[in-house]
Image (cartoon, rainbow, N blue to C red; front, side):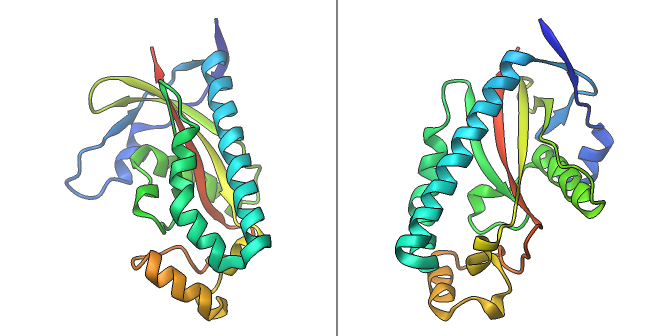
Length: 200
């Protein structure tokens, strides 16, 4: 039985975020009902990953400070994200400005990130979003995204570059020479947890 939840993203909006000449990898269906079972599965995956990563980073910040947290994040965050995936369910984090290139959003993720940013700018509620996309391979998948906002504890590694401690800057340069993920302030959109589920 399908739930009444229908989230439509316009194809035009998706096309607008594509670089010139790049083929869209995911095309949102205009209006597809999302079954409650798939939606619950996506929420559970996002809850599990979010809780796991917050616990990991909070523990490491308390134990070794921001420089140690960056090292653990670099070595463990992707592995932990992958562990929360199951057959038919893929999960990862995507960023508004990426530190790790593996966290770059695709076209469909970017549409959701833009909507999250607009909601924050308009001081509107920031609900999770879900929609179905048709992939370049012709398959369909449920895409579920939950916004990640910058917290106070994030600023030690993601805040104003001039305020980041030299030891932390040194680790960032060593681990992420192409880092773009600084200059944030509390409450800004950092990115999202993105869940993909094979959809019939």
